[in-house]
Image (spheres, rainbow, N blue to C red):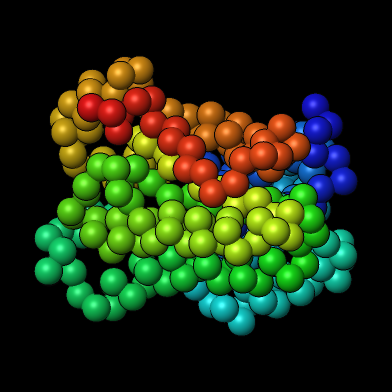
Length: 247
């Protein structure tokens, strides 16, 4: 597949899970991918198995580092045609009122401010026809998850910000959409269910398709949103959850 040839793509959270799968899928489709993440070991292994424009350690919660990374990418490639934001932190933290301020701040910094900051940084270098793909979660409004309140609040904010960007930058020919994954089989989700296996199995049994999704299945949706096949789609939320949000 070469549908994304000549497209320069920035992917955050690319060392693992959905972000890693997306980096591979887009590279296989011909895109020049800069993969960024705080996980340097994961980035190194990704670079060893995938042909990329490059990898770069990056904490999306650091706005100065984000701007520097984008500036360096533009210096190499002139334009950024697509930006996909998958960097996230999540865990089971307990009742919302018992979660301390420091944790709330860190989770919002990565999941929400990290997303908005990356988008703000790339937009001045994005040409007409460009695409931004953000990543929310069914926990961000479709399925409450009270033990992860900072995460759910951040992911709800991602959806709202995506819609704002779609309206603001549509006249410039830039499309902005969000993917809403459900229970996807990733290292992060496996860590979340550790110690809660019975509950996780019961929840999986409620999924209409009766299985977890794969990171590759979400990555295929991301590829569609970056490609010209989705040229008239903006401000959309594409739910990839096997039907879980319906039950």
